[in-house]
Image 1 (cartoon, rainbow, N blue to C red):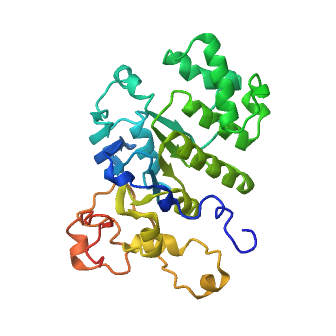
Image 2: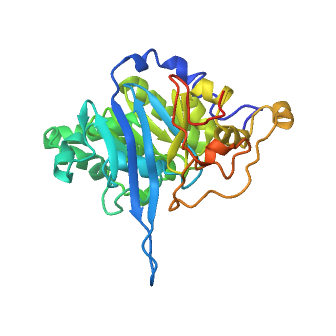
Length: 344
């Protein structure tokens, strides 16, 4: 925080105003009732449990839009992201990309869609091959998709490095010779190598120094304006999501409990979990920070291998009622959707 202002205030005055009318266009990505289950450990006379990492998630992303996904660790954000790009097996539900269903495709059939959807990973060091130079890393996707001639690829690698703010003279260096922020820029350049329309950003700044985070956020927003990209942006830092996302979805225990445009969600959250989540985020205004009312949740996040006849948030909800424990609330509404019987 500098002079009482968030370090991300320079990123954009209002991300929602930067998007003209993406919601009116046909969705680029449609996710319907997505479920991703894993088999848990068993033992002697103990059957293996089912881990419901993602349990019925639905959302859409329009061309040129950033959809933010927030929630506690373990709520299923990264599992959702990996399922979209085919890194996690989809148990049930549908994923539609540019009007084509991709959730049931084999690895070979999915290959042609990978030029449309790419991913930026959380750890910029672990996601780069330490035995490949930066130039080889950025150029490899072009070779896989047979883009450009060999000479043209070299020029395209140089162009992408300049686009993400890296000196092209460093294209023969290895990942360990770069800082964390520079390595993440390499990851961004690699994702852009096949000219995607949608980039899944799985906490792309959480492993970076605070001083570098705003630079990477600025870069992503600039690239979105230049290239017309769409983002699924996953982050823990609500200040980042507020500035970069046009719409936001709040996840709890594998389910989305509330979605709205960024300004509406942060000014008027309706789900009790959203209210608690936002009340825990510090405010840059010290007066508002001292006087605001906090929502403190009791208990712990339930185990994902349990089944819940009603709302999975019922055991921690401060306004729970009898119906919450017997019937699961549905995500209802138009622009502002909430999965809560008590939401007004």
